[in-house]
Length: 409
Image 1: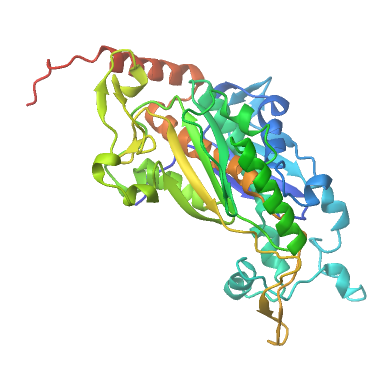
Image 2: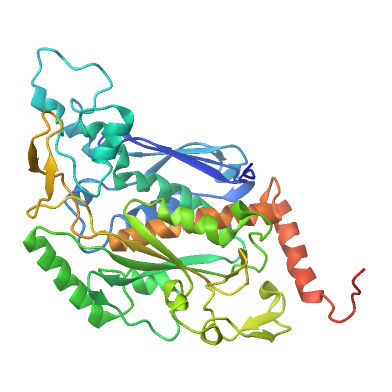
């Protein structure tokens, strides 16, 4: 039986419905929270990045808070938020909750019968016994991640209270691979957000933009790889004792749940499989000053901040590989018409050419939610003040722990 999550979230809503709803449960009381300061900027970041489609020109995402906060502080009760879809006004007939008008124009319902390879269209209609793929694609759309980012923004606000920060950058888009600096910028997002493709390599950024422009001209799409980095994470989050409590597994599952993500790495990831062990594992050094690491430092971080499913105190590094988006504007892939089984080409739906920079922001949100859950699992309490006492006591224990004094019995 899986253990109970301390922090949990759910989302609801369709891409062209009235809006997207987010429900976040498990946040302690007493956390200062303001939508315009803490949540809306993250929603705006999710909409950015070179290669996005026309939908981003229509929407200007903001979260409306419905419950869980009073006078600027969380109450300990569930938080509910809604991100309204401005494009809903153009879809009131197609996405109506009412049965269709038998005298109405069927085309006004915007049905889709030509499933796109790589999307949930076909498997969804088969699983849920539908015929119109719009019944599937509206929920399967990555538009749903706006609600995830809203929840993740609250989670990262909690983590920030305890000195944990999360940022990301794009490592590659299509065939273009960026050079990574020897040391990441202190304010990672300030640097990556300044780039249209959220990369740290200006020369590669120009090549990425050229690749996206070429894909757009060809009616094609591009994927890529991004890294999410969490700093200030203390040693001891997660556990080695059961498969479902291992933090690397929880992070990988959260990252893989993002639309179009087909691969996840922790630290060196697959590169570590190609090296000898002496070039992979991180040497341990004693350091009295570092309380968040238990008094130990590493000469490298090939493990990505995790050993045995438990954080080491080093920066947590999680990478996601995003496949190219399934909707192709010109080079449409072979498909089948669900009405009669005849061969045809896959349907087109308004879409991005490349969404890797935005996916990195969603990746930050998912890492924040998993880390916040593990943090509350370790230092849990009903209020921020109680959690603060628990956290400070743990850091004091790490700082004061004696060496060579304890006897095993």
